[in-house]
Length: 224
Length: 250
Image 1 (cartoon, chains in turn purple, blue):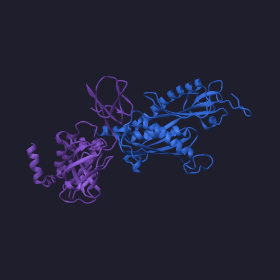
Image 2 (tube, chains in turn purple, blue; image 1 turned 60 degrees about the horizontal axis):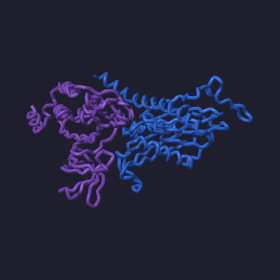
Image 3 (cartoon, rainbow over the protein chains, first blue to last red; image 1 turned 90 degrees about the vertical axis):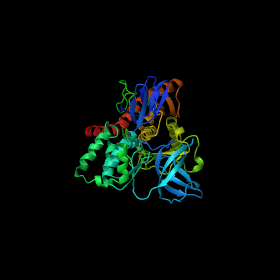
Image 4 (cartoon, rainbow over the protein chains, first blue to last red; image 1 turned 135 degrees about the horizontal axis):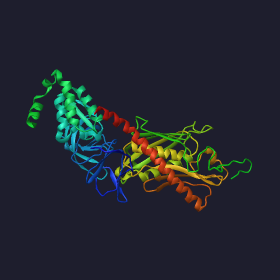
């Protein structure tokens, strides 16, 4: 899996391969352009950054916080280098400064301004910050890790691609512990099964099962 | 080889300098990445007696707005010397010299950073010199580029700075203050992108022949590669320790 740590400008390979993320070509050789872990496949190389903020991409689901209100728009902090705007005419109910929302990015223009759609406001719950480069591990392949988290903590969880996690009900303290563990060990293999073990140990008391919400139970049964 | 009144031999017959270094030898360099927790990226550097802290903030919204460029990010580089960094107290007000260094260093850094990825944004780089003994602008640029990489900002290459020059008729690398005060001294701060050998900073006042300048740049390029090795090692060290802990958990 993950290869060695590379720094910007470090040679990854001299072979001709497909360029993945965070790589660039100089004189036919592939170099890294950020501090990260290089991942070299048979026909593709990429670098997974260890640092860095979220960059908006199309079809990402993100969690934003309203930071400002103008005449016709709301300014949303999407935990990125750039803020997004929501035109008020898209909304049926008004938002306030400080409201947290969940939205999907429909398009990003050439100056990295994101257009949002499917805006829903959160009521209650808590928001946690995680490193945006580790969000794929928190979700897992086909939501596998997210399912483990939902079952293990009994919380309703929403993971934004921009490094914000919203959670309500259930065992929030356990969730924080689990998120920390995932981030610490994000580069290791078989993390999902280890997280199952992690929750298995915590669940020995058998107290968590009754915390599962009925609709969540239904969802997890359907998955089976 | 000799001054008029005092005879200072800058390079002796054994090829040793005043502080015992060879002509192409650098002063000891120590770099640490990630020392300012509130900054997006930071670095601490000791280069001989020079002590530097660099911090990177951003990319973020460009303020004042009229400075924003819709094609690339603007790099705001601030080089500052602490009042206590020189033998006499330095007036802390930014002077002509600091503004000039800030400008050229920022432009050098811009060659390495993929500024075109961040239109309309601004990247603030603040570098503070705490102790100085010649070659602070290259030390500052070296630290700033480590901080930039630590912030996770995409870069084509790490910028490695080194100063070369002439003292007592010899072309030498990494001059100290003593050597810079030689009668015929010429100081040439250089910064390279070591992979391509691109020269991104060159300042020169004084007289050098064409051959001398070429020799100096050649020596500088070799030295810059050594500096780059140290920068890369510092960045990797920060994470290899963290990864080791993780592997133990596994």
